[in-house]
Image (cartoon, rainbow, N blue to C red; front, side):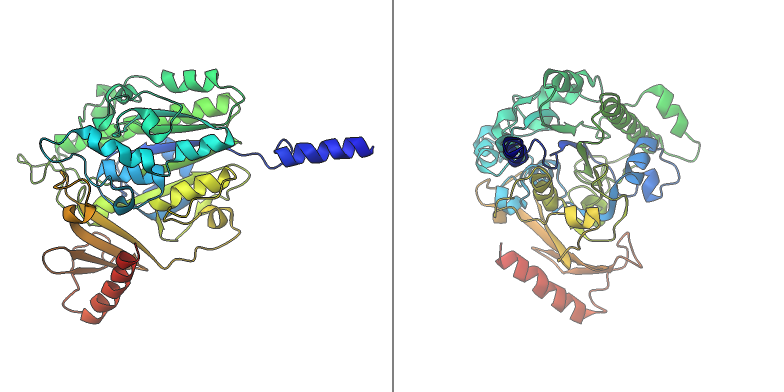
Length: 413
């Protein structure tokens, strides 16, 4: 009996009988507004699979990306760091500077796949990945070997889901981290005709109809992935994380008003149209489904995943562990979330501050935007969620107070 007790104790210590660590599936939508989901109240777009995921998840409707640019935002998801920390602030380096100059930034950062490998996780990169070879971020397997958007990895979702299924089959019995970041609903907006015809209407611009259809197409791929996990018996021991890399407001006119077919107050901007995203966390039996009104940031996701995997987040990660509030066993200690906006094409890849255009802070319902050049903007998001009425001149004391809060964060970075 004594020998049996010792054997059981050893098994528990080794983790065999301890609380199991989850597989992790991170689903990243690409260029989608925080409003454009059924579970967020959109009256036209159909997202039944994400709606179901939201019902089964701790849902944070007040989530934010610090930087509304895809490459910088994806790097934050992988590292739990602000752009000024990981230095991946732009999509492109200056003209004449090789893209490979930026690859050491992700190699030196506390990237999730590299850290999870310490707990025996294998990892698979699919879809968007800008940082050269997938191994630069510590993935054990992947589809991208060159970078900029994601080259061969971009077939995922739009053309096939099979590489994901093959990876999981090859690694039966192993813990895995899956990065599912298809370039959807990102342009090109070329949805299947069967979906497009649902959204074409006499009073709706065709560009908008195509964008809506792309969202439903992306939702279908999410449904396929989640159904696969269910069929393989992986649902209960998998933490599913959903987030959008940055927002998007579809431009419907004949001429572009920004770098692409998106409106000025969305992607690449300091407004909620570019920054805000719902965040979903599903881990059956561990996370309690339901809406949380806490302010959260995508810097929180890496430390949350590491804690779920039984790892201590490194000190250089800037975010909070969301598991206590997601499981209903605690509260977040923060009062505000922060961020920074940079140029699309860097002036100097080694000095992030040279490329800075705006800083911003949200505290409660108040949002302050401070540009490098020009006047600050203040919004009451409870009354004005689409930031139409700038209150900076009317409430200067609030501007002063929030500027001090923002400056304290910035100086302490």
